[in-house]
Image (cartoon, rainbow, N blue to C red):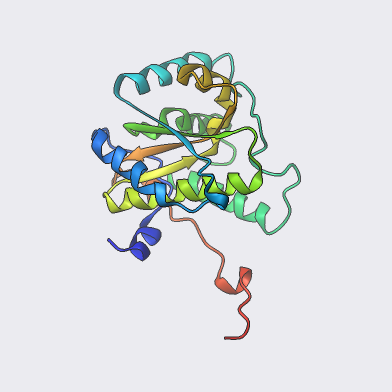
Amino acid sequence: MNVSEAVESRTSCRAFLPTPVPGSTVRAILDAARRTPSGGNLQPWHVFALAGEPLADLLATIRGKLPTHPRGDGAEYDVYPAKLGEPYRTRRFRVGEDMYATIGISREDKLGRLLQFARNYEFFGAPVGLFFCIDRQMGPPQWSDLGMYMQTVMLLAREQGLHSCAQESWCVWHRTVGEFLALPPELMLFAGMALGHRDPDAPINRLKSERAPLEEFASLRGF
């Protein structure tokens, strides 16, 4: 698989098969992603990978807290701006509607939507859960570097025949995850990522979100 094929075939997978992923494969992906660029070569990423019993223990802890803490611990950062303008607001609305349409959940079915959203905290059934953290002294440029590392991981996963789903939704469980992973106080949880084999029969995995045409966001001059 070449890079273009990996980019084109990468989607946010929201239903995984229980097929285990060897630890050697996860290690190889995370290790190869070290070549991700970062300003000043700070390499500001910190990664924690869970599978098997440790992953099951964490998910059981979250599952036990959800009934009394449906919003988790409260996020340490805003995933989206409070007043999201256009065209971003429409894009976000559209992808949500398209996703729920694949599994027949209407906008009026609030409970159905909540239950589906809660699947984030099961890593959508993936056998591997990754957590990405960053030192609190870092600023927006280093957050960008961490995002590049995550993208590299997702593309390398495709090379291995795997799929993924980046999940900023895990930020609302920062305290619980931090305690479980015994994170030092200087590390902040940024996002989770589900990793595993895509369930080809799951309707939700048919979604391939729209992308704006090049002319909408790029200006090429002197060509």
